[in-house]
Amino acid sequence: MQWLTALTHTQLRFGKFSGIMFGLVVYVLLTAAVLLWYQDDVEQMNWADREVFNHKIISKYQLNDTVLQQQVLARLGAPDITFAQQQGKVLYQILYYRTHRSKADGITTADECTALLFKNRRLIAIGDAATSQYQAATTSAKP
Image 1 (cartoon, helix red, strand yellow):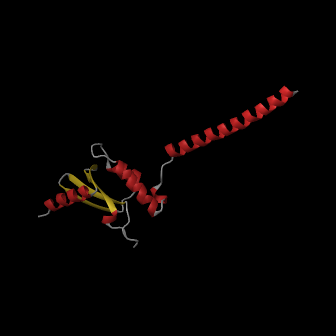
Image 2: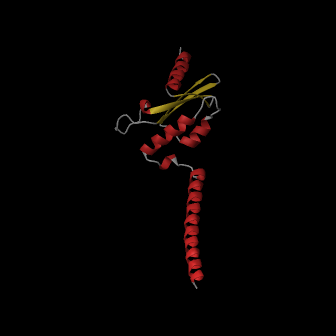
Image 3: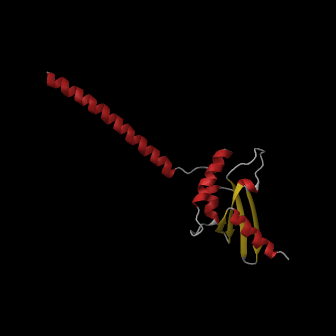
């Protein structure tokens, strides 16, 4: 009879352990599924979350990779500020995404953004270099 009591206690301990392990595995799988397949919706983010998100994504862009404008728009959504100029067959477009706020005035300015410069819809410069290259390219075209 004593062996039956010991067996029952062992089964209960194993049952609790199995339940805890099962719950932990389900939790890990659900967390992984959300992280891998759930895309952040920039349109639903508040301004602070969007700034952090924009900074995080832009910091991953490398100029030696081929990053197309459509990919950026699909990931980051519409830019906060944009300018474009056509020079013959070359299209320069600069997109500004807000990545840091300097003043809580409700107005987004270029100094609160990170610039992305595209030449014929391919990323060629990021940040201050993008602004400088855009200004150089567009002022050289004016008579």
